[in-house]
Amino acid sequence: MSQLRVIVCPPSDTGGRQVRVDGETLGTAYGLHDVSVFLDRAGLTGMDEVDVMESPLIEWHGGGPEVWSTTT
Image (tube, rainbow, N blue to C red; front, top):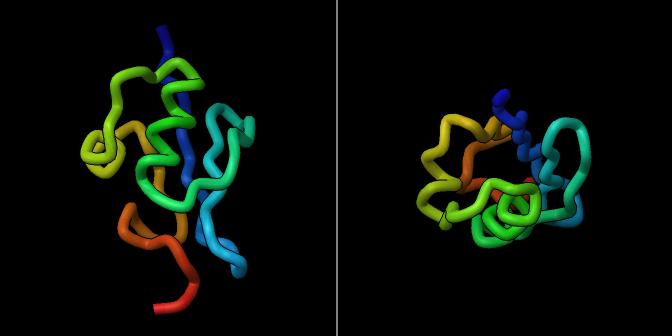
């Protein structure tokens, strides 16, 4: 079975990051919990916030799991 491609896009100017799985946008996440919920709905069950931060399956674009806004 092939792995899903999970991408967390860069933060938007209004806040949050789009989460995409295999090219389909699942929604806008405002934190790690949101990402874990989206992944659960996509079939990647049992991933909590720590798993989301550490998973090699997730590509973080525009900053890692600690970045949720465009301002510092």
